Length: 550
Image (cartoon, rainbow, N blue to C red):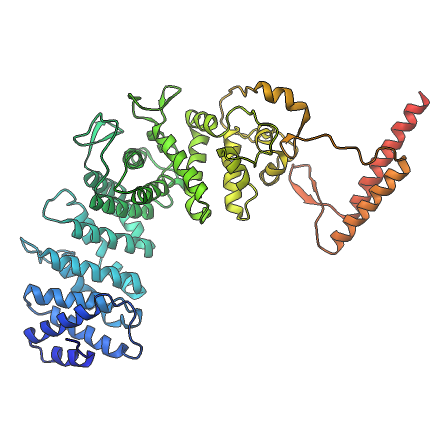
């Protein structure tokens, strides 16, 4: 039976619980999938919201409580009618029904989980849609109640839905309020709290200090996929941890903090090595894990390499490289997909770059996989389907961040050696990074890299004298266009070219550049162009004259 909004309001205004319950259940059933509301009814929806909140202050039977909260959940989808729910009074009512009130002693021995879940859903909608509600939530110390229940992550009384929407609400309030994020991180020791929640969710055991296994599967080479509910909760925890660790890799951490981050890093290694039900869900969980690993202080990433080498593990230089291999495969999969590279590719690419920069074994393993000894010298570095070719293609990508990160990754794998970098990418592709670093004249950036040999293949050694350093491949010999010209003709053609550059420069079509004393690119003025051309031909004529007199 369809009911008019005004008719529902009239039923609510009678104050009769049974009449209100019938009216609200009808409304909730009709609007359960409604996300777009009729314009012009905002005042009526606000009035209904006020009446429902009034009912929730009374001693109601659970079915009526649930119906009231379902109505608020539906009404709170409408951003234009949130005013009744964003007040301090309304938020206090909903926090109390969610069982998150502080020091009120209102949580019954056997809480009504359905009511709690519905109140949490209401709070998620309201906090997400209303800045005023976010502020009120911060004032009412909503995060304290959430943290208190997070501490009960191993208590059997809370079902999946309560835990999930606790986490979803925590994610929203920490994403939208910097002060709440800081409070959770510092005052409430959020990293330790959430690491414990993630540990409990995944059902972990600890064979060693920084070595993690799934309880009941210690020593197994292949773990069963995580269940759907565990995966959902784990991803929410990873997202909250991302919020509270956002600046961790940009500041120094003390010994105690470093131990906390290493503990978390060990759990994240387990996440990246785990699968979920379905490839799409697995990739989503790995994506959140990679995002969070990028926030950890760089020295703490050594936990990725700490597990002992076991049968079936990938060993390199005596180190377990399973996690690094998975990260590399994840990065290549994102690269092949090609969608929204800045958002999808850069977190994994940056993570691999920084890991390679700080850990010698990681760098050497990645270099073996990405930049194996060079054999193909006939094709340009950007041509082909090898991972090196794909990354070199990114070095000329239209997005500056994408091309910079791809170049930085390869540069680090080359130990920031300009000659080696040009060898694998070609000078034309490398020029952007070299110009930004002031390395156009060659040399090497100062860095903490071990000395290891760069052995050339026989194919490369034979072809090396014929490789064009700009394109990075062996080019067919081209006829000299100046062959047969006199010096005067050569100078005429050169000055003609200079004048063309001069014209384009004055019309601001191009900007001629030169390499300054610091190795960086600077503007070249028109008079400098003419001077350089004349100087070149002047020196050439002088040397010819000298040779004639001998």
